[in-house]
Amino acid sequence: MDALAVSVSTGICVPDLKKREAVKIGLYFGGFQALMPTLGWLLGTSVIDYISAFDHWIAFGLLAVIGIKMVGDAVRGKEEKNACGRRDDMLTHKALFFMAVATSIDALAVGVSLAMVKASIAVGAAVIGVTTFLLSFVGAVAGKRLGSAFEKKAMIIGGLVLVAIGAKILVEHLLGA
Image 1: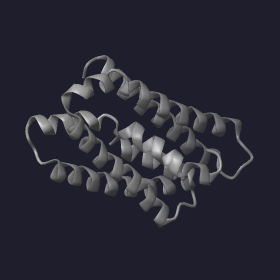
Image 2 (image 1 turned 30 degrees about the horizontal axis):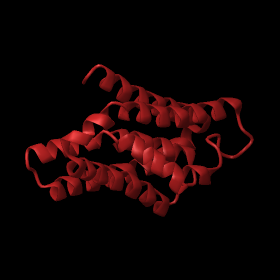
Image 3 (image 1 turned 45 degrees about the vertical axis):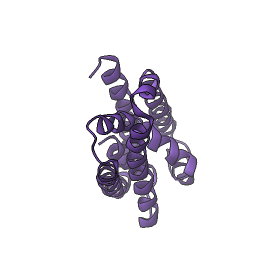
């Protein structure tokens, strides 16, 4: 669901989003949602203890920075067509990489859980990846429509959603949820 929300926010920031770009977004989010549990499964329970101590801070930081930038740019009313920054900035491999990592880092623990119950990582990762791809693709396309309809307000809401998702990840981990 985090990947879906970030995909919607990305679609809001790219009002002229093309279908192939929505596929790219879906591939990043779906790919990382499949990759992270696989890595968690491979790393096992000993390494996850080190990662889980700070993964929530990384996710929060990445999403907060991106979200705050979106809100700030929209409020300042940048002269560019897109208040999120240049449209191409949201679709770079670097930007998509950081957003995909931020929304999938918790899936490392899922991989460890799958290893503990001796589940097939191939099946689990495939189901997670395909589901996330589909939701992220649809979310990006829906975000494009929302962005076109509500422009500046949608960008502010999209930025706040990213910050809220980061805060949710942080609070859940701090409270031990």
